[in-house]
Length: 59
Image: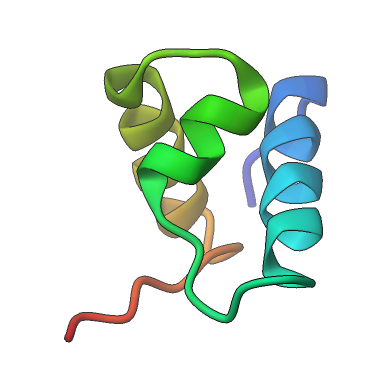
């Protein structure tokens, strides 16, 4: 498994905190919470999914 970095943990924590109030956490909400672009949030989400730390639910 790849090494967890501070950035990974920051995203996971933001997703966890957002998930406390909303069942479906979207990329836009994560980007807003971390004050980053949607493109950056999308890229990190893909990395976290590749690391099997995040699962994307397709509607």
